Picture 1 (spheres, rainbow, N blue to C red):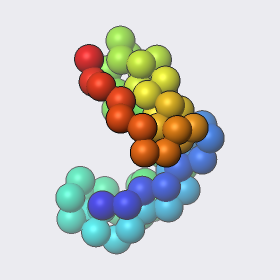
Picture 2 (cartoon, rainbow, N blue to C red):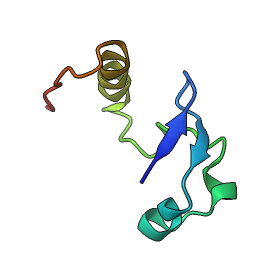
Picture 3 (cartoon, rainbow, N blue to C red):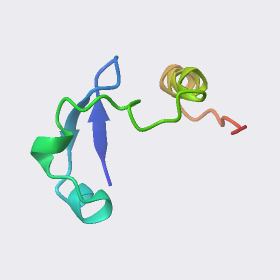
Length: 64
């Protein structure tokens, strides 16, 4: 599954295969806020982790 987001983590592209995996159409995915389905207690950590990965390609990031 390939999904691209902008800097605010809104979905800008979703491969058609994403529907097979998560059941959402392209129309439902585009402009979807990528952090919306993350537990509110984990949003800050998720954003931090994604930014670390974007800014440091190849770096490993440990989960909590």
